[in-house]
Length: 294
Ligand SMILES: Nc1ncnc2c1ncn2[C@@H]1O[C@H](COP(=O)(O)OP(=O)(O)O)[C@@H](O)[C@H]1O
Ligand SMILES: [Mg+2]
Image (cartoon, rainbow, N blue to C red; front, side, top):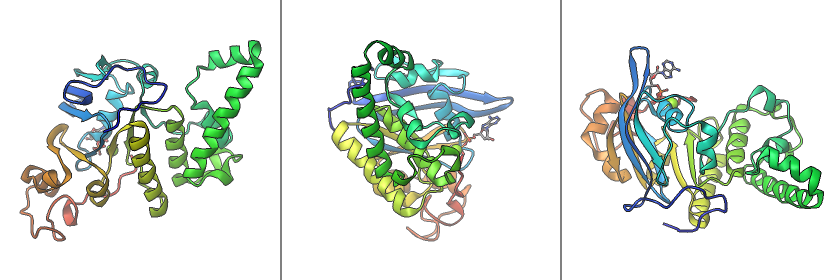
């Protein structure tokens, strides 16, 4: 665990037990369905924590609730000691808890580099005032931001597309741009919903390497939803498992993989076979949830 934090850190220190984020009894209903049903979990500061679970377990909904995109029906959640549940996404993001945003229609009509620069932490208003009253300072800041944007585009192999309209990017390239843009905000806690889905394996590896680097160099904490158990086993240091709206397991990857409750959740109660391959856990066979881009 690293203590270094990016300059934009706004939230307070981690809890006594090292958790930077804590959710307690979070509920989200859609009509009669409890998509998230009293989910409780903690994320350790500086960890790369995976959130796994069968399709429909409520993972994406949980993300949407804790980042302010859906209104919660119950529970509490705090980030760096501050209550975040029920607050708007913008407020939560300003505290340093950031998720990726889809490229909207308006953003699709802008060049990739502009999409990136909009992700920089300055307020648009502040920026505008700087342009008017402190043109020199703004130009310096602008060139810094541009440089930072180009560095990130390089990491994700998007350099050649800096001038292209975001709307012309392929699905995989868009996902990378969404991620790169989230990184422009210099988050302290980054939430990623299946970041590897739809991205070629080489870029996927680069993305994982970059996550490790951000954690090591800047102490960024990650919570990522992932269905590829190979990725989870190799890259996560904690794994949290959801099923039917609840958190059913939480631990180190090898512990979680061997947990009967987890195996049951994936296999729908079938008896697992060997220790790997034919159903030794959430990795394979019938238990492997199909890749879901949502
Ligand atoms: N906007 C929505 N309106 C109604 N039901 C939804 C909505 N989003 C998700 N659900 C339902 O909530 C449950 C959890 O879905 P989701 O959070 O997408 O699961 P996961 O990401 O784990 O696959 C599913 O039953 C899904 O059909
Ligand atoms: Mg999902």
